[in-house]
Amino acid sequence: MADSSKPTVLIIGGLGFIGRHLALYLHENNLASEVRIVDKVLPQLAWLAPEFEEACSKEKFVQADASREHLGENDERSEGTNPAAEHIPRIFDRADGKEFDYVINCGGETRHSQPDDVYEARSFALTMTLAKECARRGISAFVETSTAHPPPHPRKETDKIQPWHNLAKWKIKASDELMKIPNLQYCALRLPHVYGAYNSDYFAMLICVARVNVEMQQDLDLLYNKDVKVNTLHVRDAASALWRAAEWRASVGKLEPSNPKIPDIFKDSSRPIAFNVVDHNDTKQQHLAEALTEVFGLKVSFVGSLASQLAKLNLDEVLDDMNEVNLQEWAELVAKKEIPRPDMSVDGSLFESTTGWKPKYETFNADSVREMVESYKRMNWWP
Image 1 (spheres, rainbow, N blue to C red):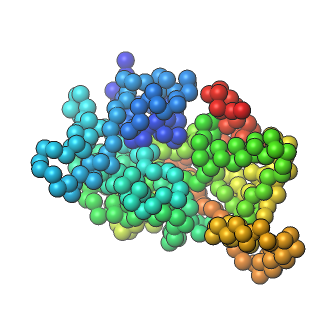
Image 2: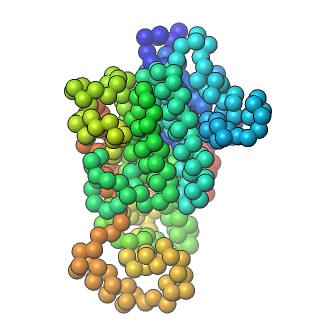
Image 3: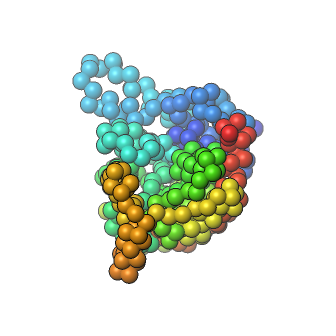
């Protein structure tokens, strides 16, 4: 029987990569008295590994899409015909009539290079709908995943963020808009590249490309150079950080300047509470290259900054004509002038000092790659 003294938790996007690991973390550590997992994808279609079966069981699952509710606000159809109207009660209402203690949003569009309307509908709209409902219901903590994709140089929470891409732009816009919602007890975690078992984005693509190059007996070329930072975080650490953030945000309550639990930078009501979370590895592309070399036995090289900039512009014909001498000379000129490369480097010390959270998986290495490969093998995804 569930311990009623423990928090009740609602996970949005609970069948996604981070969401399912969060559900598993809560289940394995018996942290919640009730967990509800909401996703627009059915569990049968989510490719869940066996270890997630209990944590993401059908008894805990509700199929719904909260972003449709936000889009329905301006629906011109007659009252009662909006199919989105049923989603919010189905997501939030509990049998005992009480509210969830924590709402953790792991949902939204995670693919890169999507048009603005996709991010607006699937990320921005989702966040705004959930935030308004959490504020209306008096939820103790609304926590969500955000992105740590700032410009070059290490970034603290006090720095002004200039998003690299549309995904980050809409996450930041949502965070700013949330400050206009009264009575919202909000906290965001800006996550770097998250890796771990069953990863299906950045690291999955990198590992698959490495496997193909092994099959073709070719070296692997990566953009930019070995010193470009690609900060990392294990998915289990992402899960534990989200849980700790929810506990902390609920304990803080309303933002009062006199509250010693609140870092000074967040006592200004115009700044959203958003923490950087990262491991202690200061991961660079060199670490990725060394891990791939150890696991796959292939040579990993870097094409340099000029070729990388041209690749961004899709100038394939120009790239074909570039010779190694020109690229090398350009790389040396850039290095001589100390021109910064676009890297992802964030400082996660504030979250650790504020909440006491620490990463369990401090470094990214060859074992990190092996863990992902073994998870693909268990699912019969690996050739």
